[in-house]
Figure 1 (cartoon, rainbow, N blue to C red):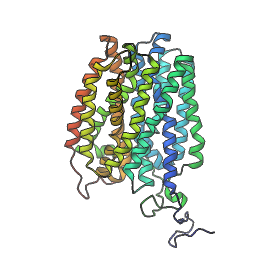
Figure 2 (cartoon, rainbow, N blue to C red):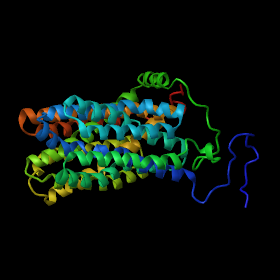
Figure 3 (cartoon, rainbow, N blue to C red):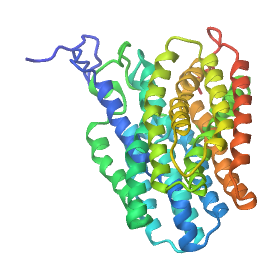
Figure 4 (cartoon, rainbow, N blue to C red):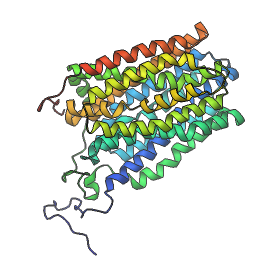
Length: 434
């Protein structure tokens, strides 16, 4: 049977098709989910490799932490430019190049012998590649393909990073323990390469490419490619930086990054190992965080569609801060019930902050929200980078991570107050598109 088309379709443009049984937006979202898992695989490694690299090469934890911090900083700083490049060259091309860059950096690290190579392969290449598939990628897909259920889809795509952690952390921990760190690095490189065919075959840049309206919305023609991606990205930053909500969002999200990627993801395993816990056991606890992160983030997306995003953020940050203050008392050689409770509680809150933060960017900055969120994400990763480095330095100087846990708990209290200070956007307040 021939599919019906809309009589208003422009000649030569893709025809609008009748509504499919499963909207193509959900297929694109599924490919995005798998892509983020593949790209995030390398983020499972740093916490597992600090001790092996220190043992094999004699590099200090501060040196290794500096390479991890460079990776995290570039992950964030690349995101807003990647969002603009997706407007210029399309989502599919940018993501394929990014996956190839991650695989190159991971494979090259197998032959490194000096700390500057760690900076180049882990810091530069992997940072640029993963940054191009950061949460700004999720924001671009969500903004283009969905009108309804944006909060829920944001939660699902954000949970992809946690899913990657769930899949790769136990596997990589086992590989590092049994075979060394090099096979683990090769494993995550292959994971990035395996995803490329899915992106090439199933990803589409815009609903109009397949003649569809976005999910829950009306049909719109595909816009012309946006030129001057770098200049546009900087202009959007300049405009957003003149508004108070931007700084409150960026500041609170920097604390979010410091208390998650910079702190727990990088230093939890070596800290637990300091207290006599086996590396595989500590990595398994991080994987459990990933399980509950998926639940918490999707539920947060559902809540964001229904409640004030500012109040949600304040609650998330406050609860996270309280949990971190108790963590030093829970460390020990064995996994006991209070530690399991912390892992579950912290997992539910891990990146539950993303859906309300993105919703506030969308509310405040309209069509430029994906790029603005990219800059907010950059602050997240700068915060993560600082704590990844300073946490290693604190361990080298004091012999303990305790001061880092306490300081991060206090910072989370500040983030909760900052979230409550964000003003509600009135109709017509959204920053005009550049």
